[in-house]
Image 1 (cartoon, one colour):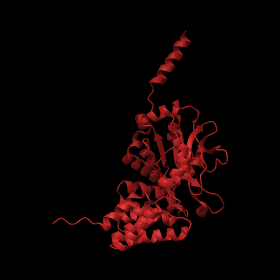
Image 2: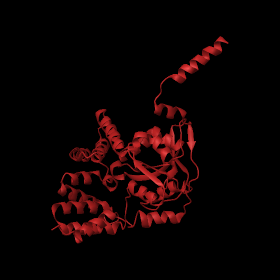
Image 3: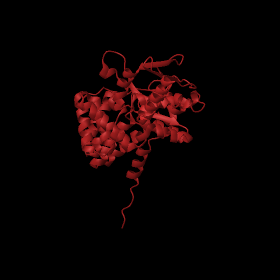
Image 4: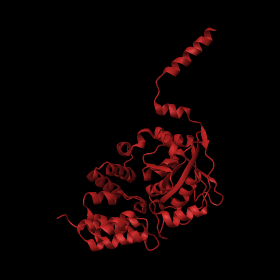
Length: 356
């Protein structure tokens, strides 16, 4: 009887001890989760975005290969040589279908587990590379995180390339995944039914707010730089966060540092922070030079419409309207859905008369 009372006392004390919300969430998560109900799609060349998005969407509604071809040919990649789709573009396509979609950066292993445990698969952008020359073999790849196992220390993914030919699940241990995820600032997209928004917002907490998310992402990059991880990716991620927070001069300096250290050959095929930061501080010639270098390196078989768009903005900033229009037109031809390019063409060809 005394022993029973003593054990009960211990339980009460432990239950009364203060714990953080994150500690509570992590302590209550199952040791392993595997979400089901996906339709696997094999990607075409440079079409991992459309394929991964189709796989992700299949968790919420029925999809077919026609869904993939619509994403690949009409909604995301309207030009055959297009090699890049922003994660925000994918979210926009989903929102147009009446579902919710949120993109954030600075994701963590624990947050990904919490999302999956709550029934939210997560589309992530991470590094893919084969061969001996990392800086030239490296490229972006999208996959859908749909499970984890703490006993093995691994995440499970539906991968539109590496799952070939049967749609097999692909796994990466937590550390390997994080090292591949970090170059893309640990970005992630969650699709959700609108009635689930409150649940998702509760899981994300402060990360639901874009300003707080940028502040947190900046703190992560700054900590990495201070703690001996001052590589090109840390400075690049720092620059992204500074840009979101309106610290344009600081962002430009961070991107300069990242480029001076050395970025993978294809980094600016997928990430465009340096273009935006240099435009924001009036470094127009640097934007034009950077765009021309990317275009020359890519050759005739690869095209990224953003290069032409940013060059057009730089020419416009210099007052060279003819060159600006030409580049805006190329950007729009490379992506028929590029509304920002269409808007600038309209503004420059039909300027609003000055008020009398």
